[in-house]
Length: 122
Image 1 (cartoon, rainbow, N blue to C red):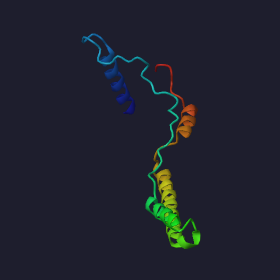
Image 2 (image 1 turned 90 degrees about the vertical axis):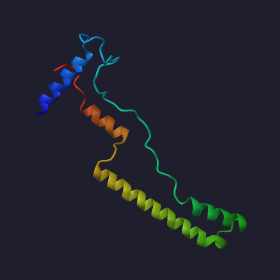
Image 3 (image 1 turned 180 degrees about the vertical axis):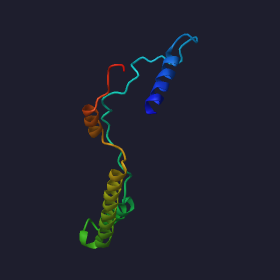
Image 4 (image 1 turned 90 degrees about the horizontal axis):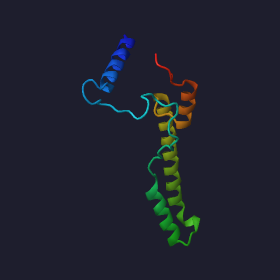
């Protein structure tokens, strides 16, 4: 059943590429095949967290001539916020690894090299 869908797709592509209906609809400048590698881009980082706690801590430091003892409550609130953010990022990364998510480009390249595309026509 899947082979029949592939054959129908190939027929449609060849019909679009053929010039007997006038100008061809598709004019590929490269072969219509997937590459064996992906771009090595960096993954997007999440948004910044604990900005307000950090700014409150810095204001406290500036008002108290950078004495840590006078700003202990602000430091504790900042460190607790950082701990919560790190725990949330860790749980989020575990969920994406369990659900599939996106592959890192290096891992995708190793998998694509292990299972390359067929270069010959069937």
